[in-house]
Image (cartoon, rainbow, N blue to C red):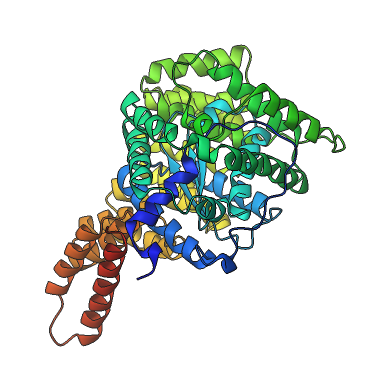
Length: 482
């Protein structure tokens, strides 16, 4: 059996996140230890490992299904990847609903981003510097190269490290960080030099990717500097700084490298600030505090007054001050009538008044112009469910799941819609796909067995289709076991 078909090597993925200390150094060219010819981890192996890790992560870490956050990050990653050194650009994004700073790359094209990144970055350029750095880890196949370097590393260490990672991601407490630190301490001396080179290489290649994509290379040093200042007096640094330590020399190195490129003007993208406002709203439990915060931003200093106004609309809608929310939204719609964030906000205000006959046409009209929009389709389906229009909701989601078959939340919503419509067989089939994407294979098998019990003995085609999916689920479960 291939090594990568067992969980121990999957646990080795955690090595990528280990908080090894790194120091800035001169540009270094590393040998291509991770190529397919190395015989340890091929690109195909990495892809399978990445998908297995993604399912494991989703099963244990709260993730964000906010469509505006997801689409913005997906499009930004795609734009950057086109100018990267990646051979394959079919990336999978996972967005952790976590206010701390963290982003990571997993072999096989998985990029993870905490929503908290938006609370640290001040503009799209700075956010892009983090993503470009992670894309460089993937394009240079740093995982495969580290496996080559660490082929004699102990599997128990890797298992302990992943356990600490999951604990830190789910609980965010000192226990998880202590577990990570204990494992790191046992291997720092052996890995230090190789990790320094990897981080330095990712900085260099990531900056080149930004330049090719028309972005500001100086944003990387700005982001490093901001992270260093923001965490200087912190008792426990965020996860990103454990695996990507920032030092004054690393910042200086990034500045010197950025100075080699000609200066140019870089436009401010309003979507970064709108998404940032949504992240702020998602992480603040007190809606009245949000109203005060965005009101203060409108009256004083703000990264974007337009985004501050949008945040105020969201906050006022949450506090049920709907007339005020409508007044705040009006100038935004007048300025950008086709902006889906503002369109959804307008529909939400009407829905909060229980005026679904006014709310739904707002989204219907917008979908006529952009029928494939993920945020519009998702919000339309959610609103149809709330309004009790399950038949139309099924049609909307059945079409949309064809566009986004790897999106767990779309399958979850479709299963809920089927349930409300009384289509029990379809509930089981949709839940199966949701549980598979979430790495919950036992639950997926139960759903398939329940679906099979509802199928007539004479319907051999449907029964064969379910049997084949059962085989898939069992194989996936076996590959994830020790």
